[in-house]
Amino acid sequence: MDKITFCIPSKSNLRYLKTCIPSIRENAYRKDHDIIVFVDSDEDGTVDWLENVKDEYNVKYFVNSELGNRLYGIGKAYDFCIEQSTTDIFMIFHADMILGINADLYAYKHLKEKIVVCATRIEPPIHPNAGEKILMDFGMWPEEFNCNSFDEFVQLHKHTDKITNGIFAPWMMYKKDFLAIGGHDPILKSCREDSDVFNRMHLAEYEFIQSWNSLVYHFTGRGAGSFDGDESRHDAWKKEMSNSTKEFIRKWGSNVNHTAFMKPIIPHKYNIHAVIENCSLPILEAVEPWFSGVLLKTNSLDVIFNYIQKEQANTTFDLLKRVQIFNEKTFDMDTIDILIEFDARKFTQNSFNILQNLSDIITETNDLGEFDIDCFRITITNLRTYENQLIQCNS
Image 1 (cartoon, rainbow, N blue to C red):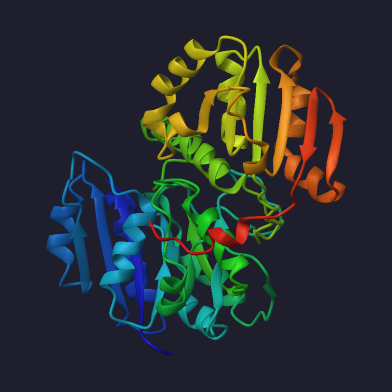
Image 2 (tube, rainbow, N blue to C red):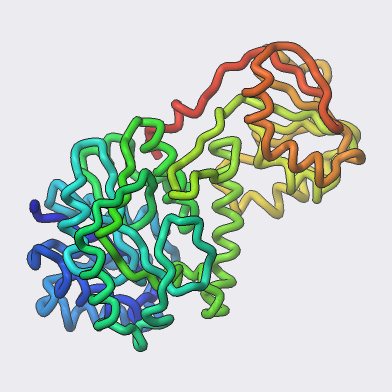
């Protein structure tokens, strides 16, 4: 097989790197793969450890130039590693993963241009399984990892020819194909960056293949913080996930959606604006990300001011442009494809459920004109879609 580069961001992940990096050197089919680590934060001695073992494990590492002050975020960190790589192929790898024997080779056998190949995760039974991974407990923490049992399990499955169409880390692809779509979008700093890039790959007609004899053990979100066993890390992750989810919705007009095997399902993105009467701050907080723009009626200047004061720091979108006062004299329907009008006093949980599925409703309706649903008056003047404009990331 060709030489590849393992790209590993680290956010104070020394505990996991101590098992991750040796597993690549011990279990990879090729022992000379490049390993690049990007240290985004270091509150645990990561840099000192990497400096001590860089020759033993033949690891290159780079450190955030603003270490301790500002995070790159995982997407930007991955892109930095990929830019520094000198191989034609790279593999995205998490610090809290352990490579199974010959997992690199078994994934590589499926690799071609415009194909993204992922390994199959084996995880302790913490989170539900929709069939996209294997739940089996070889240890909840690196220090208690049962290496021998894991190796035996991997060897038992090395001859399986099962493949499915899905995508999740770790994933492998040609560097030139990744760069062709502009890499990760930096507006998704530390969460949802993978869902965004997978959407864009899917729209660019890249094929996803999951190999079920290419196996890794995954400690289930320990590096990022999605596992709630580390309270302080988990609290930070929840805040990042909330902000990134809203950014994803603002960009795509819909939430993350995929098959059981994690293949993206992408609703059409429409140009949808809202005109809202009697809007309160909680309602604006709930609905703003779902529209291309929001116009508020009936003395809503304080609501807009308070919302922007609270939310602007959490988004890269300019909320002064997205949320404005409705002015009947300057309102121009010619610039809006779809208009949603409603009175916020009539907005319920059912209304919000409809809003979250609005793209599918419009696609199914597939007709110009006006209609009412729940509290919404919907006017459709154009059914053009915009999701393909999001393939290329130029940020």
